[in-house]
Length: 90
Image 1 (cartoon, helix red, strand yellow):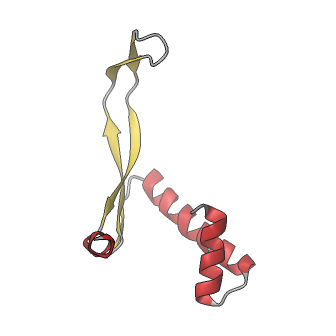
Image 2 (image 1 turned 90 degrees about the horizontal axis):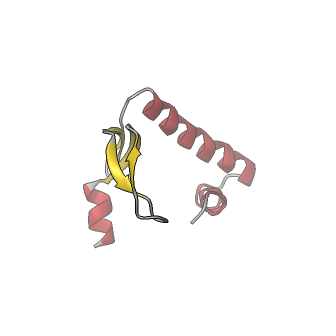
């Protein structure tokens, strides 16, 4: 499901216009991103938790040449599914 399909589903399920559903989805996603940028974690009980983890600099391999390369330190987004989501999928 892509963003456009999600907007369509939200509009249908909530009885909203597609324009209002798009605004709602965009605001939710932007709010999550802003919280992560500020170093906060976002926990949606039953759904899951979004957080940012630091990744140390490390040595990797080029896929094309097979040579070792240095990968810089950075931040990566991490999502952990909540118990209700895990149960619903099993």
